[in-house]
Image 1 (cartoon, protein in one colour):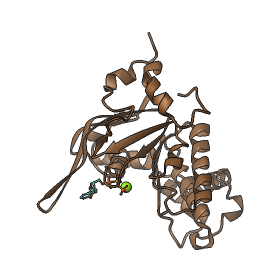
Image 2 (image 1 turned 90 degrees about the vertical axis):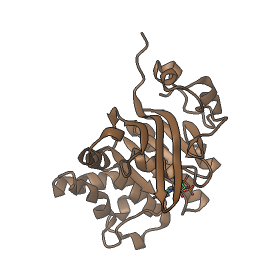
Image 3 (image 1 turned 30 degrees about the vertical axis):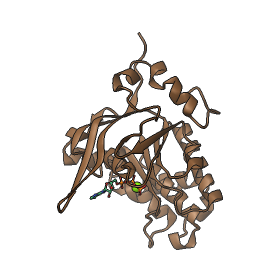
Image 4 (image 1 turned 135 degrees about the vertical axis):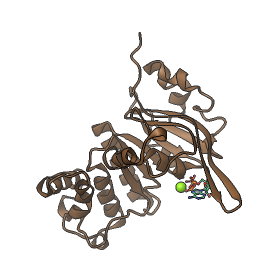
Length: 265
Ligand SMILES: Nc1ncnc2c1ncn2[C@@H]1O[C@H](COP(=O)(O)OP(=O)(O)OP(=O)(O)O)[C@@H](O)[C@H]1O
Ligand SMILES: [Mg+2]
């Protein structure tokens, strides 16, 4: 018997419909996708194809209108508000294009902040935040405020903050969108390193083909579904989850732009 592959994310006919006045927008229209634990997936697709909508659902910031969404074995689509809040605080780390750091707080305080909400004592919060800032190469910037940091440094602080509560999934929505090419590449290398070192699942939304090259797997969305022609298109979830070998089809592997780190999952 093959050992079942552990899934970080599994969706079944996932839908998210928005009603604005008379208009109904089907942002996700029956999305079927599976992501293996520890995988680095780049989510690409045209503007409006549903990428951010999907990230928000996985992160528990929003709820689906139909279908099923499982994250780390928990069915978010059937979860109560309280469970979703716990999910957001403990399992997920967000990184956004616009960094979203608090301007009055130092780098250290920004990174330590999420730990307040999970009840970690101050001393431990600061120790952990310092450790993370060292990991992202900012040991010399602990007391700097966001305006005293470069864009790339601010994004590294945001990444440290995303990781501080030991999440199992990092959700990054265009994290290099406000950075120049070289700095963006540094941020992507950092994300990839953290993904490999810590085994954290990483979902990266990007418009940039080069950024997608850092990932284990590229998934293309179009009109709220997996794009026709994408290796994941039309694959039944069952076929994915049977065995580790079946989890990543040969088509997917050959479509991966970066195979230098094969052998995963
Ligand atoms: N809160 C909302 N209310 C109404 N419509 C929404 C809302 N959020 C998203 N939409 C619509 O859903 C569709 C998908 O939006 P989404 O933000 O997921 O796209 P995206 O793929 O992230 O695009 P981009 O690359 O431009 O960021 C769009 O047509 C958008 O207008
Ligand atoms: Mg978006």
